[in-house]
Image (cartoon, rainbow, N blue to C red; front, top):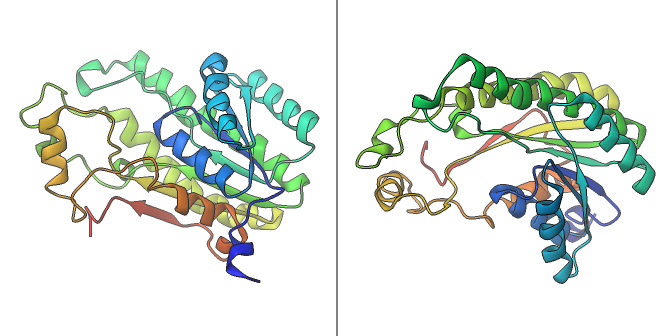
Length: 259
């Protein structure tokens, strides 16, 4: 098959949870630019609709739906709506994340429990329900979004000279979990003709304090933080036939920081 055809996502129905966020927008753009029909689902339907409108202005096939990941009934409603509107699902990008703990000083048992309800239990719930749709569609691809913070301990020197505080413990906890469940499901879901992979990005520039950016970039061989274009190609690879022999992998995308 021609390489252009391998990367082509035409006629693929793709769900991206949390697709209106920073990395989410890059993911959605890349998949839609490759020809995919992309559904964005999030709790904030108004924000999703505004995001979809921007993509449609660029003539991309993007659609808005709503889901509250901590609520099983909401996930089932999303599942039914995808089936009603599109009749199938080929790719699921498990990207939504909630950050009730912004730094270590915010920690409490209650906030940790809230984080796990969305980022662990909820992430698994939506993953299994969407895998059911993909299986019934003949198979496809699941891409879990994790983080380098699920692979390594925090580099506290990045925060020197800032008032950002130490990073939150829950994020390290559930991002590590999503990496290893990827390996588990890659073996389990092969019987459903579903590949399961994971992407662990490094830091994305989002107007962090200047000192943090300086501290961070000094450790990155490419000399900068990630931008929203950096993730596009990798997501298209894992979603398309070009990645047909990639399964059970966690791909670290950090500009060489941990090389």
